[in-house]
Length: 487
Image 1 (cartoon, rainbow, N blue to C red):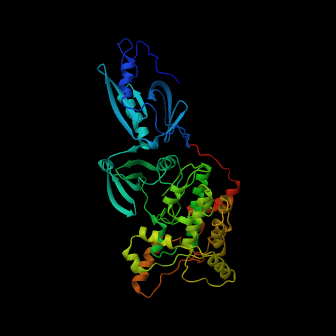
Image 2: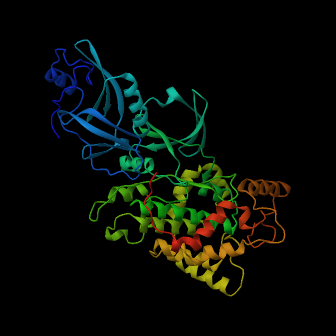
């Protein structure tokens, strides 16, 4: 890399809008440009792209670290490559500027105070700006968007004023640690369980992540409403999360904060379509201080077993947190109605997690009851089978991702969902909720009817494409190669 000293041909204008024969003082121009950025970049520039799709590739004039150079610039999703530097865009704000020198205009893009890109025309500047800004931090959200309604804690439906296109908005406190890396991971991930980011805005205290629209609510909200899932629905929910963890693991990443608030379920979905939010990601190395992570995750002893030994977060901690989630779903008991009316779901969740005690003896006792073909405790409406309980035990005992994905419970759930003579389709959660409300309205003493996957009235897996696909993957997993995603 060297200082920019080359000149364009005599018949062309250079990047600064000057003809070669003009009396152009590069040192003077450099001093003028230097006033807009720092002499030494402040961010880390070693972020290799997870996605190899090339969005733009052009030879540009760039200024950073006190030099102006001519360099090939390649734009990947969330990564700008300049020479040997891989620059994560989600850690920067982007600005457009014009610089006038000797009555000539030069069009600029500034990435924070570290980098300046020079363009000879407004159109080229605009093209690069539109491509880069989707990964950068923006301001003035309410100029372009209007909040519609709050769906649950920190999650809103939102509409773009210009074309009335609908999106979702997820608010994240700026105090959350590792946000630059978390945003980078989300920008560079392509998985059906991760909401696609459209833009990230900021105000004084928060970031607002604009994503594709998702109509859903957290798992914990459904538990609060005493919605009773079928076994195939719970199995599908857990299996989809495992597939997401496999994807993240293949890309040297993890979620970091799996819990009943961060798994969203689409009420309209027949097969429990999910979206996963609440990521807390940082590429820790062994020996790094993880106290800030543990403090923010706020699950204390339920982060994962072994965290006392300063083991860094990873796939093992995600699997443990998934085991805690499945335990909560399986052994959830109704919360006092008066308490539920007085508190919002978020506060109830924090209270629930604070008081939660994982009772391993309860798991073993319930397995014994099921083994003896007896009826388990009626208050645990999501206890379905001993293989389900065995998976909980394994997830809480540092099992491997492969063992979890090929666990017998998913195979059993598939077998139970084979075609029956009567074919009328699995009810959606919305249908279950409506039936529950109708039942509650008939008589206060009547209880919500339990929907059982063993019933002959449910349809085959073939009528439920997502479930069918997921369960088919159980058998195909051993044969499936681990691939890095290329788009």
